[in-house]
Length: 197
Image 1 (spheres, one colour):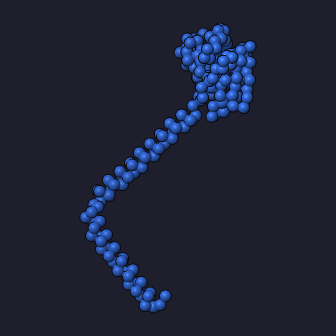
Image 2 (tube, helix red, strand yellow; image 1 turned 90 degrees about the horizontal axis):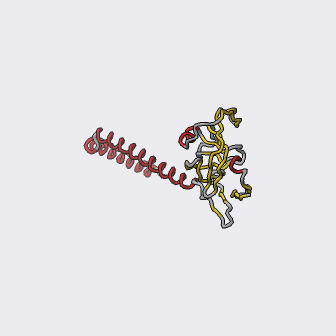
């Protein structure tokens, strides 16, 4: 680049800067008074917050729908096939003493287990005091005997229920061995089959 080219470029830059400063100084004060700029900034921030709130709400609804457990299938031979949910657990709908429950099937739990609130709503106000050994230590509660528990068309009339501790927050109740022991439980990769003995 020669001397003449550099001078031409420098002169053109100075001219552009001069035009830009003049138009910015004269036009911005007229076109965008400070109060208008502040309003624009506020609505811009509000718009961003609304956009992200809507996006997060849609993602939450989509994930909740995606994570919902698949329905239990009853075969012609009367077997219950419980598909594994996306969180790795098995869930089934049923009832405890007539109150609907969303069971988390837990083959490691000794008893069907419900929270104190659920038990009171299901009319289970009595029982013998007990202490349950859990992964989080000993938990006080009570045991209620001879409670009807159902899972779909399967009804078991005399089940022992533990009240006061539920080891998994997403289900209303744990479906433990006091119910499951009445069935042959076959655990495969992505499904659990309950077969009446």
